[in-house]
Length: 97
Image (cartoon, rainbow, N blue to C red; front, side, top):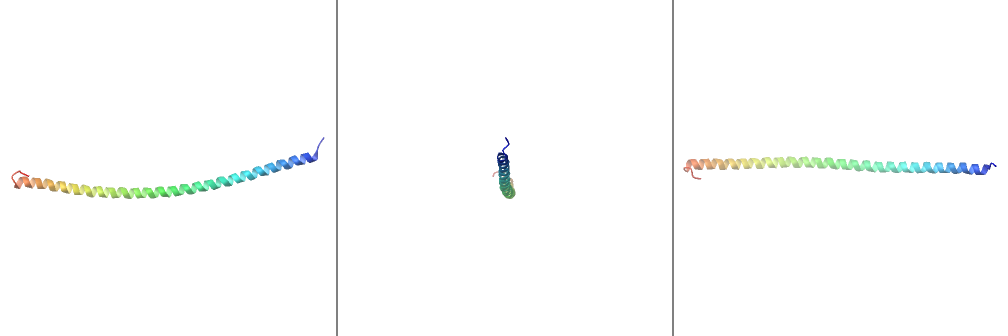
């Protein structure tokens, strides 16, 4: 025996389940969009921080190179002065330094 009310109830129940699943799907998609945006913002902040650190590192390397070259010039100058002094001392003092 066909029961129209039971068939109607089943149809409404199926439609209700379908709409609930659609709502849940939309909620999950919205959550994924929110998470993706948060991750994108975090990645951008980290990229900017990385660029800042790279720039600071380049500056420090340049400062180090300048310092090393100045120290190298001072060392070369002092070594040259000592060598010249030893040579002149030997020449003028009869070889004693």
